[in-house]
Length: 112
Length: 112
Image (cartoon, rainbow over all chains, first blue to last red; front, side, top):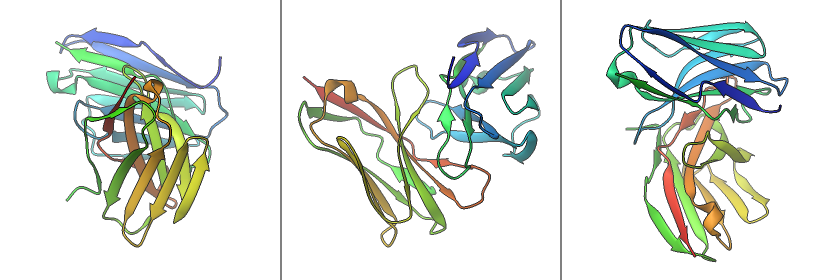
């Protein structure tokens, strides 16, 4: 399998649940990212990991917790989310950070 | 003022038309410019990448960057129904850890 793979593709969770999103990249890249895409809004960068170290956290609420155990895997742990957190969560990876990132298909999250 | 402005459309054209998609930006430090295509329920797909000013051509697609005007364009020649998607512009500053700033996206529909 090639590219960036995200699981699950769809997730419905209650506000008291804890869930995790998973991302795996098969491109040999050294940087990985989480983006949030809400309707009618530009993609918002949430977290950046470079060489497995978090280098950016864009004022994201603590109910979102990223984890990068190695250069190929990235997780986003979710707990006590709000309905306004419903969105498409996209994982991306890149090798040379300024030459564009490659995205996964996203996880469509609905918080009820 | 948003860092990147993009007309959200929707834009509807007949098959075979030349399509022009545009973004303006305010940060003169942007050096890398990208265009992504996003089909419904899919992740963004990197179409074109350019550095600084100038033109870049790839098949039916041409990307232009005019840094003096802070304006970038994507032209699609001989548009096809399969080009129907949302087109996102993105840009970044050198050595910013892959932090891409996206436009809102333009929804394009090519009618047979």
